Amino acid sequence: MIKHLGIIGDWVIGYYLEFGIWVLGIGRWRVAVLTPDERERYSRQIMIEEIGSEGQERLKRSRVVIAGAGGLGCSIAPWLAAAGIGTIRIIDHDEVELSNLNRQILHWQEDIGKKKVDSAGSKVRRLNPEIRVETIAESITEKNASSLVHGYEAIVDAMDNLSTRYILNRCAIEKNIPFFHGAVQGFEGRVMTILPGKTACLRCLYRGPGPEGKFPVIGVTPAVIGSIQATEVIKYLLGFGQLLTHRMLMYDGLEAIFTEFAVNRNPDCDHCGTLAD
Image 1 (cartoon, one colour):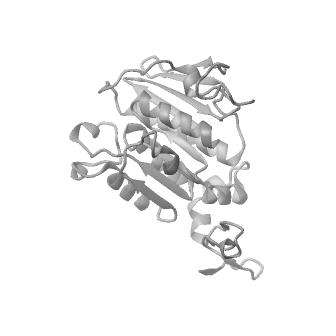
Image 2: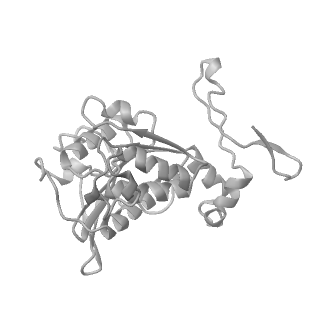
Image 3: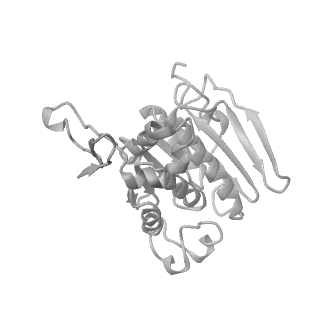
């Protein structure tokens, strides 16, 4: 679709031109030019010197996977959508329950019994109809993890169990995709960004299977941690700022304290130990 911006008489393409070079056998080509509506929608963040129009177009080209549509995923997805991430894929196999509603803010009373990805996806699309939202109602396993994240630039950990996090951590390392870890319990949370082959990974930090099952949590905690994870993703995609690499940021909501711990790569790590710096 052709849009006229009225800027020095130029006509520009206002939507993605997909597969433009595919017919030539070269590969997939995407051009992300902001439409007038998008320039208005994102005008306040385009004013940020580090973003500008070029950065906003970069966000429009970006493709991010959110693994989980629970407390963290419901906090991460709206902010990435509002920022203009061009394609967001949400993965979760579960259905909405009444006990989810204290923290999973994309799920409402009328959504009980629905697939979480359907509930979350519909809200995110309404929040920003300019972006593409993909939903997959599957469990993440060792067999399907690689295909679920293929073609994406970032994986956001919004899971609630360590075993699936290990699967995503290994997959991210094998496919060289940045992995943005977050976890919550009660009034506490933690965040770490993992760049495969360059920084400590999740397996460098944790050992063993970890606890399974339900755990206590209040909704404000995933709101804080999810917002930090979304911030890390945006910084990474735009290439500025200091990422939470080689360090774990711990949040204590009761004491209103953030604490930072150094996390070093383990040369004997069974996930990333064989990768060169």
